Amino acid sequence: MLKWSDVLNYALHGNPDPPRRVEKTEAEWQEELDPEVFRITRKAGTERAFSSDMCSAFGPGKYQCACCGNDLFEGGEKFESGSGWPSFTQPIVEEAIAYRIDDSFGMRRVETVCNVCDAHLGHVFQDGPPPSGLRYCMNALALEKAND
Image (cartoon, rainbow, N blue to C red; front, side):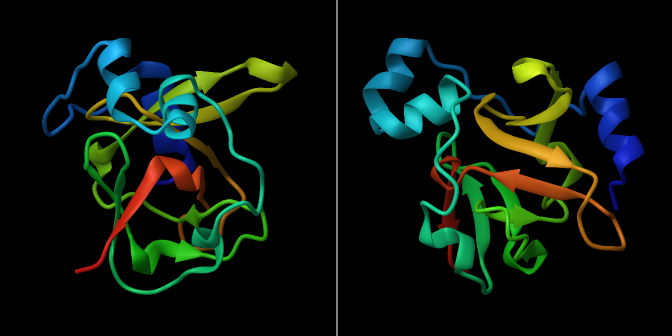
């Protein structure tokens, strides 16, 4: 189970090797993605809080990267954070997500990106529920739910 110290270690000293890589030009991503998904995932945008039904949808299934289909989270790790964005306690596997220090907007946060295609997903915070204490605060448009 990942803890905050693991997240910081990855963000500061290098991420786990991805299971595979998907690399495309900006033009290729722009051509295949919905404009809002492109803005969020490829330009590090953020959707409005409470703008997605995904926030209140719970149940089994996997959440995948909207850009490359990489498995990111299991439905059982999803919880109601009250933040207005889908929130999870752990990635599906340690190698699913990469971490970057984000000093934008006058604050220090840890950005989460898909470790396969570098899509911006959201941020991770240390105010989640036990036992990990992590809250992966994700943009719903960066995710696709696959029912198993």
